[in-house]
Length: 318
Ligand code: R5P
Image 1 (cartoon, rainbow, N blue to C red):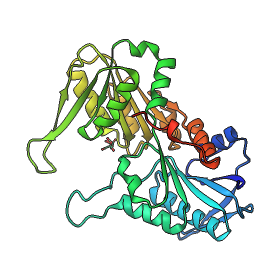
Image 2 (cartoon, rainbow, N blue to C red):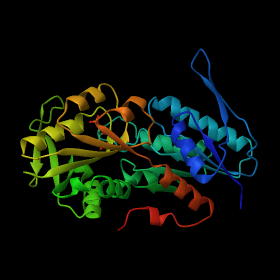
Image 3 (cartoon, helix red, strand yellow):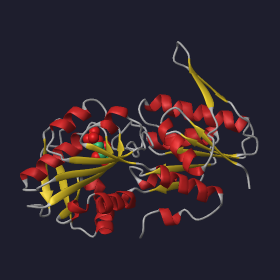
């Protein structure tokens, strides 16, 4: 078996270091320089010849910089004769551009997959993709870890008081399958917030309709990404109007773009659970935000991949 090596990109060093600590590894280091013209240069500082190298690098904001850094690191490893290269991309940027919603637009998620393969990845490990079909954009194996069990265990052990009258809610129709999975895990009812525009004009105001009974229930809104916070907070307001009691949320990827933290502060949301797939200092320290680490899950998956053991046990049931 090849020697296991973990390389930390710059995108989420605390997560990469925690994964390395759990695996009992000294991370392999790469010097990354940014020049005045914003080009970057990478230099892997230890030999990787014949090793199985796992690069931890979410393609989180600044997405293009982190993606390019990942591609350059993969190229450097391939040219340095690494035995196997696995891109560990806990947050997969561009995932929301996964199909042509109208004419003359790219399928950016597919292009990103092509770029990673061209650079030389042998496999990819990721967490809670916006759409599972993105796995099919790769010709190399992709292991897709889910966070529903992580959230469920956290809720049951840390917040048993939230469980008495809880309803899991999807903030849009596209995420119903995700909410259903967590509702099943927690054995709670579920509801849906449906957004729609009366007018097909993209500028027309959206109305929010709550499908299901949330009156006097605590609600847990489940989503993959918290970016500007608009989806979450508008869903929370609609649920409050429909009579929900305590408003909670669980979003895997805390992007916290733009004014998201202010929007969150002003919202009726009581608490938002996120994971550390993205390193966002202010977001993770926000009083309404509670962080759950994916490091043990990633370390377990890396160990299994390296030992050619099943990763299925870490994946969703059914
Ligand atoms: C959309 O389909 C996603 O699942 C999220 O609901 C969305 O990306 C969240 O973005 P924002 O926080 O900007 O509303």
